[in-house]
Length: 433
Image (cartoon, rainbow, N blue to C red; front, side):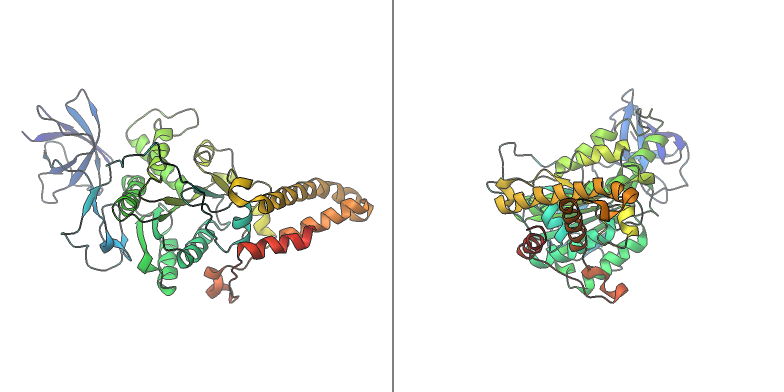
């Protein structure tokens, strides 16, 4: 027997089933003119299904009948989605025809089997051509990099530069997930990839600020599903870019509010930690291929101690911190060199030369910070000769890590720069030796 809607509140629809209740995450169809789709979120007493109104249909009302479909949200996967811009449900956003019905489809709730025994035999470093990243946070195949910063400090621009540089120098397929970001940024990314002939190796998924929190909270799983398919079925290495992980948490928080769930102590939804962990666990490597991810993390009110920021940060192998103070000095990328860190910066991964240089550079930068407060009081001329020499070396290092980005060429009129790792290491040795 069909279920009956017994309550509607914002995006949450309560459906009563007297027998044969649906499965968790199953799609339901309201028997109305719109054939409104609902998704089962959780149950109460095994007979009342709390469902999410996927397309924000405002015509729903109590008494309407609902039928199960025995299906979950499925998206098209495979070569047909390469070069396309799709939404949470795999529908086109690029003005082109829908992906054909006869292509493979995969449920976004199907978790790929993890291979606990699998380990990458030898870490493989992928050059990005961006000095500060290649030196401080090596881009290692199959690992995760987080780009942290407040509004307007260059997170999206740095991500676009990474996509531009790595897509050109790598045979990997790029998957981009736009989570609740501005429509303008998504359009700029699409134009950048198109102008640089990179759409042929990319697939883009967007649920931006104009979409409801259901779609914004599911877009990460949609993109991860596509990445898993290419990794497991086509045996490809995948570059996964997510912008913005904090917006994903925000969307889950909005859903938690409309579902009337009690928040945790930090003010976030009760399932916040498991939501983040579920998505991160799907961005893993196995014996078929690797998923290397770059994820931007918005810092609300520039408060890096925010619980959400801290939680997401702990899932990353490397953290690039973008600073408003650095941006105000006109340095691009506006990376806070002292706060940026990586667990991958070890002799076993980057080699002795790179590792020893990193220790020397970090020591100089920390000394520079401590000397700045002294200089503000007594002046640079009062420093000892050795302190003055180290201070000037640190200033040259900071300038050395600034770089013109290729994706900003049209706006600034300045040609972008690409530096090999060898060029980066040599430029640092010339300063500190």
